[in-house]
Length: 343
Image (cartoon, helix red, strand yellow):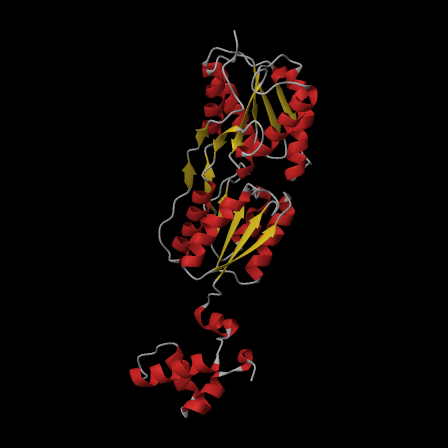
């Protein structure tokens, strides 16, 4: 007999007990004697009984599943976040379903609602753009929702979040370049990452202002909204680097590592030596950053920790425990793409 078709009825017939006795024994119900429980459970294992997950979920009101939406499965930024989520979920014997929102807020809310209809026990959205226009729909979601690096400016008390301090990270990057003697520092950003780009640009500007430097608008290039995905980020760095280089910068801070990789490609194509002629600093510290040439100095986001915290918050909310939003501090990882400016 196919193990997937072994039922409680089959076990009851072999054990010569009632259906209800088998059901209770399999759930370790103390109303059933220890000897009977052990015998029924042994028979179930020998016969290859597989519990009906749907029936069990109807009894417990839990499905043992978590829904996770990321902007793109191909984006290397999310690998460590997923690993952190899975680390905590696996310890609780929970399965994680992953899908892409393709950087589209409407697609994102549809994914969240689909997860809800599929009766997941919690929903995590990474790089979320859910904002006020979806507040009413989000309030109808009856399972815990946690956002990672929320890119929407609006905050709601029924949504929880884990994020990195983008302004602090940008200041670390720019201060590094200032300490190396650079005074004409450019910034290449991404317009479709509204809130995080705004905060990193503000951090860049504040660090320059604190050093007594007035930022020249020509030093800043922000790619327009509407382009998404890993390849587009690289292409934006490649395409927009010449704009700031022509403004006479000696160093560049990029919105993320993929933009920085594009800038490195543009430098190579133009015969600009990095870091001898131009220093480049990224943001995120994706795995690729240590393998490009020259290896990339960058701001490290504790992505695995962010994933672990988000999953832990889901568990706390499920248990009705108090839960607070988390903002983590990034740190700088120094590699080979920056150096002191030659006098």
